[in-house]
Length: 176
Image (cartoon, rainbow, N blue to C red; front, side):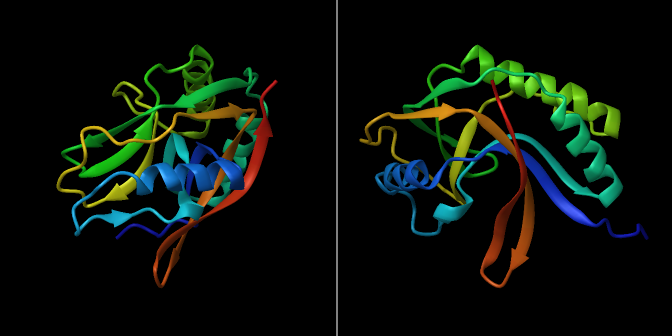
């Protein structure tokens, strides 16, 4: 049996409180099946890399590598919604992925490889998960596009709780 690891992590774009409330309003405008489990407002984010369970030494390596990321700040327009059938996830996202977001995601993934992380091989589809266990979703929700000035990225810890998981920002790094 494998020894349990110390901490569960991911890297993400982490919205401020005002944008988080706007994202929740947009998510609430989307009709979902009654069995769907909506993501709590405090957990809304856009994942760059899901790391999973790691040892503290691995986390320290990843923090050192994140400090070396040299990427530009950018504007992200959240203007569409969607539904991934197989994982049964409803999401909010952008019609066009900014080049700076793709560059940040790729550079961070390359740096994390020095810590033993293997980046996802599937194409990157940036999105904000708004609900899980979704059977179906509106084709068109009526929400005003949201503009997000992204000027940092974060390392986030997944903390289990009585009512599901909670996310806690461990550290964040500025974009220039």
